[in-house]
Image 1 (cartoon, rainbow, N blue to C red):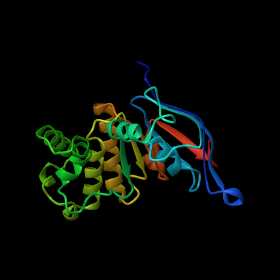
Image 2: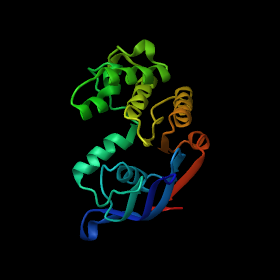
Image 3: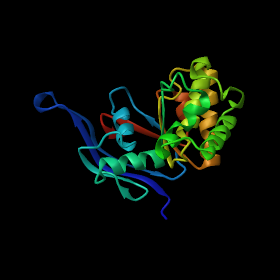
Image 4: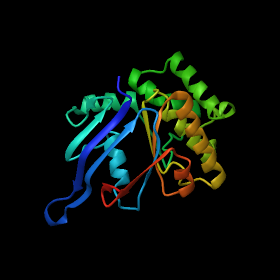
Length: 225
């Protein structure tokens, strides 16, 4: 098997019609190897969030090629994409998007429970292990509303890793955290990259976060600079 995880070739995406149409991605070509740990940089409006949404199969490009693990995602139907996304891709956002009435453990195992249609003992064991690894073993039975901002983001990271994805896409994952918590989150992501073998693409405006990544990819005006 090739060690190439993602291949994008001449990817294009626009929004609107006629004179109101805005071209956001204007021919993005890049590749990510497996176990990548990269920062995605660029000014606001450069297309970073759109690119992450396409890479995460939350939307499709208008044209170009999008391959992941050799699968042509441009040709895949919606049901295929949903299944592929659940198995292969994790997400961490600036806002953690936890379910407030669920415990930390219930939030973590949610992606696996949805896929299986129920909670299982195996899922709970995996969830407990992940919460232990992110330093929240003592908080796993607390509701999300009882957790601090940094703790919520750690739960979100554990949730993103629940299904052992090949790729985690992180959109400003430290944007709402102070410096200490931001650095701790980045240390955790790097540890998961090393130990779980998960690839990470981290969109950020933070120079210190970018410097902690192994590679920096810059988008400028809808293209890889």
